[in-house]
Length: 139
Image (tube, rainbow, N blue to C red):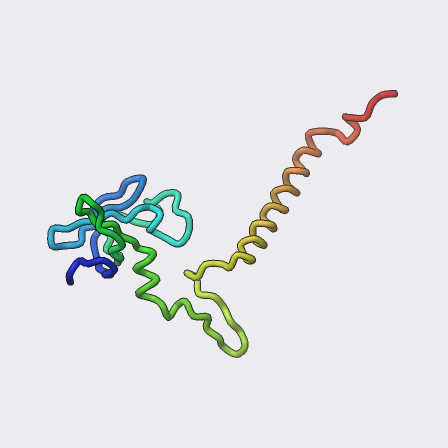
């Protein structure tokens, strides 16, 4: 297959760094998948997602001035699996596929719930450390 902009190709990971993974595309060509192009979700440690020697599908997103290919795993998976983006229905029960991102409202609700739980835990811990009457004046 020709290596051209927008093509989805298969390659083998030849090296992993803190900022991304190098992929051998064959034909003596290689490119870099930046850590931000590994997943639709935040990737703190690339080693948790990719391993050296692993075969991956990548999309060629750019050819920079130095003739190096910039690649994306997340964009390749979006192009290959468009049918998984659809919400499937079964007897009035619908669900989102595992790889579909949450809506903004869902993310806000999840954040609010998590924040409320953390704030509640924090208040409990600080009440244990300080007696309730510790700040009352002795008049």
